[in-house]
Image 1 (cartoon, rainbow over the protein chains, first blue to last red):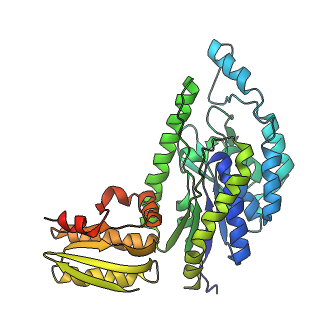
Image 2 (tube, rainbow over the protein chains, first blue to last red):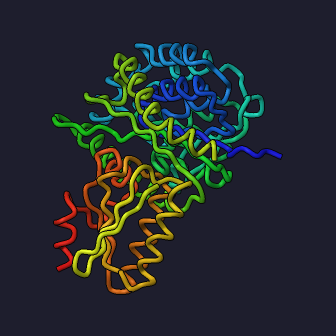
Image 3 (tube, rainbow over the protein chains, first blue to last red):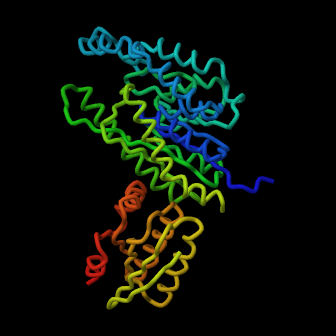
Length: 278
Length: 111
């Protein structure tokens, strides 16, 4: 019989900001906090999978560098232009980015790792593009589930898995605390991110991006409020504070993001430890 | 956790101190239950000495707000520290509870 409280770690959506999970993971490891299950959404799925596989923080740092290579956004400008002049026919399966580099990078990082082979149970969250429902991914290739979970609408093409056309998990559940509640975790450590707002708008896509940020932040607050009251035990929100704007692909800011994640985790650690001590 | 009461006209100012989490929240809940059972339903929770509140603490606050409002009163908060305010804001509590900068203003709001 397991007498200690069970711990679930939830890493929400937030693009490059999700690298803050490296700072959180390093604090939890140092403190000897055992994690019994991991949930990841969108950018958080990249790091959630690494944590579930037991990677150390250093290896996770190299993950960020290997994934967000300079050519990962290949085709974006050309396809954006072509979509405007009508020469690119855009469908629900399209994305402005040619995702071959992203897919190759994911394969390089996660290889043929499957959910079944992970050290700790992992759930990744995506969204069904056709009906808006949240889809929980718990089997098969980890890299495919990540690819579906990070498929930012319009930017990356969605991915078909088991007949569903899956896109960014952040569209349905940006901080999927409810998955950990369903799994009956006693203590939930939830790292969430609000998306930064723009101050300058020079294109239609800038306005669209701003609206996506507004929608996502409001979904985050509404769902967190509900889940917070629905849970039977403790949820510890770990919200990194950044004194500068970090947009979706600001890869050069990753070191400062990791530091912010570590600081936020250290602030919550005494409270987490108290809950674990019962 | 230490909890003190101060009655100011028809309002009771409840001042907990320290952290409100799964281990201490039941004590605060019982304290408020006791006040409500004695028809003290206009409550100000003075959070000046509260350095942390977890989801368990938030559930107690919501329960207290429901109980007092059902009897024509309210639970209002005052002097909330920035870190605690962040949790209240993220959890939507700043939308459903009345929060004041200081206890005097919170007490006066019942007039």
